[in-house]
Image 1: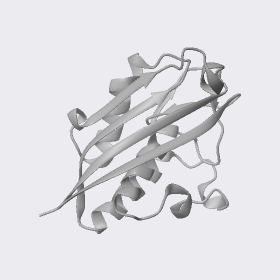
Image 2: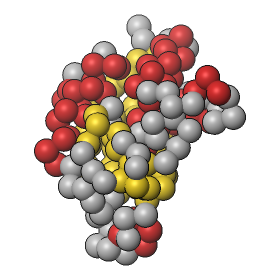
Image 3: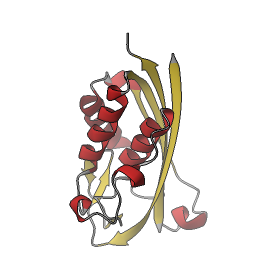
Image 4: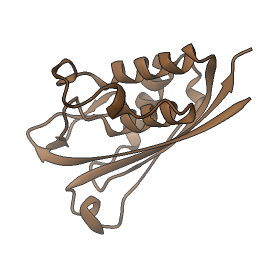
Length: 159
C-alpha cells in the first residue's frame, strides 16, 4: 500500500538570523524568522510525511507555544516526524521538493541538503529531489521578504 503526502511552509526573511535550509547553514544577510531554526524545507517535508498518514501537521506535534521547541534544530523535528511514520509501519520511498526564493542562489548547496535529508531519513540521496526557483522579483518572495518550500513524499507500507 502506498500513501502520498504534500507539505508547504512559509517563513518571513529578516536581518540578523541564520539561514538554515535543508539542514544546511547557508551564508546570507537574512534568515528565516520562526520559533525553531525556521528551516522551511525541512518543515515542508515534516508536514508531507505527517500528512501522508493523516497524523496532523508539524504545529500539532511541535507547537510554537512550547518553549521546548524554541530554537530547535529542524533536523530533530524531521527525525521525530519520520519516527512517527515508521511507527505506523511505513517507509519513505522518495521526496520531491521545491524552494521558492529570490536570493541567495542555492544551487551549490543542493547536494549537501539532499545528503543531510537522506542521512536523517535512511534513504539514498537519489531519492531526494530539491529544486529551486525565483518568482522573477514578483510578490513577497521576489522582494526577498520571505521564502516558501513545498514537498511531496511517497510512503510504502513496510513488509
